[in-house]
Length: 274
Image (cartoon, rainbow, N blue to C red; front, side, top):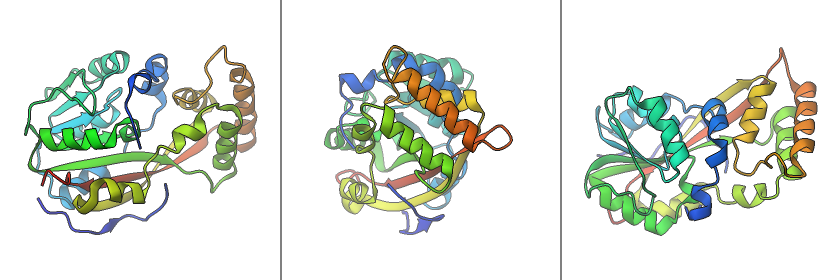
């Protein structure tokens, strides 16, 4: 399986330990996560097929699969998927949503200890999750479960921080009201950290546009799905929602705002797994 080094779509911007705290951060946010988190572009799978040689029907392990958003993308494209997720509430949501796909199953596992058999999958993905992993232990585990020449794809929907009054205002709101937004956002991988993690195994990077149009309830749910958003009972919760409503009223057009992302993909091989 050979990937050429080539940038796909137009470039743009911007890791870590899945410890006991991080695996439970979303337990009481599952409903909002299911309803309001964005999908990933279908072009992502096309990219892995056409640029990286991923075979039709290749077996996928989705690590930190959460509620199954990324798993569904690959299932819909005809790939059998095993979703590896340590959080019981999120895994149950994925099971309920994806149970009708014959190629789907889930296991309780982490990036560092998936419980999967050695050399059992063709592709390992982690979508919006890698920054919670122990990077060295995860790389060893990914290399163990991959078949020879198996591929890794690390994926993020990266929210754009500027470009419209809404995007800039939303970023300012998070910095004002969240206690740990800065510490979480600093964990997100950038090009340099991904090049360091993959080393010579990094084969290809991609950038793809993505967006959601949200009414106020959707915007509120999207905010509350984030692990760093203050919960009900926190002194910043109600002021944050009031500020969110003010921002929405100022920025909405035809009753919606546009939440703009860049989907970033880093594809390659574990350094000791080619």
